[in-house]
Amino acid sequence: MLARLIPGDYLRTFTYLNFIERPRRLLRLALTTFYRMDHIYLVLREFASRKGHFSILEFGTADGYAFTKMLYATKYLGVDNRVVVHTFDTFEGMPSSSDDRNRNLTTQSQWLTGEFRGRYEHLREYCAGRYQNFQIHKGLFHETLTLSLLESLQTSRPILVWIDCEHLSSRCLRPINRLSPQRVRGLLRRLRQPELRLAAHR
Image 1 (tube, rainbow, N blue to C red):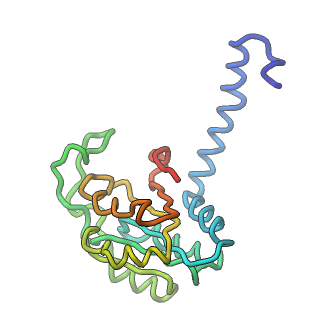
Image 2: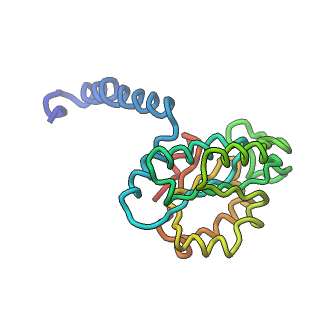
């Protein structure tokens, strides 16, 4: 309707870019910068009214910032008795890599060996004193993402899979690919970094 009232393609485009698209983009950036965990609450609220037990899977923990935010979200929304939060990490930092596919697309740099090292004992003690609905799986993905764990996810279906962008290499994604829609239904994938969210899908 508004477009019909504005004469000429140039004026319509100018009006759209400066008075519709630009304010909308700035508002979106402001909201996502303010709190980047909003989609966690969105997913939990969506499944809160559904029957059954569910799980959240995080691959790449480091110091556990996102992991503890997920746990707090389940407690805040009152679903901590039905949603278990799993996290997977060696807590030894990133391994060495010479694969060009693992380079930063912007700087073309490789990650450093030991980068993003976590504090396993500190995180475990912190969570144990506040939450009961968590499991910390220490080790490589292919070692900790076992067949028995995958089978348990049939009755505690993943509603959110959180993959740290540093683990988007072929070596890391290969064991994660065991979480196929054929094996685990109701799968929801999300990528951590905002610039990668376009790759997320349901």
